[in-house]
Amino acid sequence: MAHAIQPAITVPGRMVLPALGLGSFITTLTFAAPAPFLPDIARDLDVGVPLLGQVTAAMLILGAPLGLVAGPIADRYGSRRLILLGLAAATACLLIFGFAPIFPMLFMASIAGAISEATVPGLSLAIAGTRFTGPASRRAIGWTVGALASAPIVGVPILTTIGGIAGWRAAFLAAGGAALVIIVLVAAWLPGDAQRPEDALRLKTILDAYRPLVHDGAMHGLFACSILRSMCWVGLLTYLGALLRNRFGLSTSEAGLVYMLAGSGYLIGSLVAGGPFARLPARPLVAISNVIMGLIMMVAFSATLDIRLTIGLLPLAAFAGAGGWVGLTALLTSETPAGAGTTMVLNGSLFNIGAAAGAGIGGMLLGVGGFNALALG
Image (cartoon, rainbow, N blue to C red):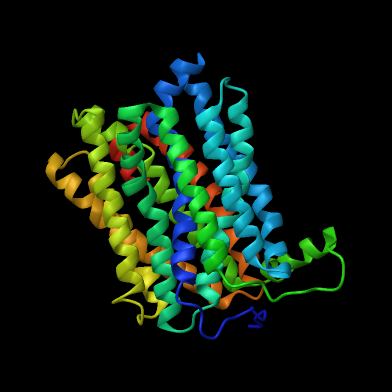
């Protein structure tokens, strides 16, 4: 297989990994932050919660096409500028939420959030996979994935605490202030881009960046794996709250603790995959992870277990799922015949497609046969 030449730093600076982690953390927090405050925001802005939820949906919808453009641009001109642009957009999104006097302004926030989603996560993983070598690359991917996972585990509880004391606007303004600090740190820690192409950027250049991926059968398999994993993972997690509250009778706060527990399993799994498991071959790691995650999720969602067993299985499924994601990212960045940025943002778009399909199919299965049908699906 022919491989594209990736820009590499033989010995990355010690602060490259913290820069990737902080950027990934605040970008994910930008998407996770609105959820616990939706009733409060809806009340103060005099809109319904379902309509308010479309702001986050708009971020994902807009982020997909923006990401498909951002990847080839990053491979051509370097990732640092686009990551800083994405962090500035995340800051704008959080601050607009904090200051917005009327609901339509939140769609300005959704545009900023979409730019952040289209640039920072995928390009951070691309850097982690290409600027480090050997086990260090797997470790960098693991820590970056862990930073993505830690936003709802660590960041959201901090924001809800601030919101409980000073209101939801104060929580978003505090997050926006933290994002400003992160921009300064990432700008100082992330090395400059070496690419200086002389020819002009054209639409054909962007399309040509994806051509090697279209004709590579091995990459088709990796992308299919990503789609199927997202269908399983997101398709089931979408209805985890319904399982916990409707089937087991948990309160909202109790269900939130279960989500935090599962998220902790994901965080630990990503760090272990990038640490003790860093020398394991990536393909067996992904295959074993898929099998374990699928079996555990099937059992946990069957609605036949005691609630304590179901809750205990969820962190294990998350642990396995995180290991597979780290391994899959390592394969995507090391085996791609195209640029790493192009590959990872395309993978992110495909992941979102799989997530949407999983949520839709899961809803149909739940309506037809209940949680047992959802688990088997």
